[in-house]
Image (cartoon, rainbow, N blue to C red; front, side, top):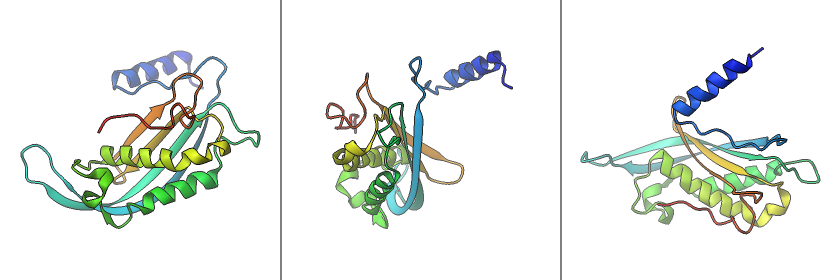
Length: 175
């Protein structure tokens, strides 16, 4: 088994690398649900003084919900709801040029920026169905741009409120 000291070393190593600790309260036993889908898009990228360049990719997108309170049916989120909402968000990007979409106008559409854009649309799509969810305290969108590279965007709900509660249903963040 893992010795307690080894666990503390691993946690310290992760903090050193800038990985934030998961927030847990005593007695919490968080559940996670993850759904995955994909889409293809094209876009322009620019870095520093180099000339912008066009590229395209097939993005594998994962949405992970975390929370400690399940619904009366014993689920954190109805998986069919999570899957269909993700598909709906990705349909708006699939086989499109991100440079031409209002959500990404004027932005350098790095995979981090795309992850944040997907997050915002996803929360917007799911909020009307929050009755089909437990208390989701953390939602993360991960965009895999290849088999060896990915970026993500997430938000953590403050206090006892969930991501989809009326007080937090409008995602925060900056452009």
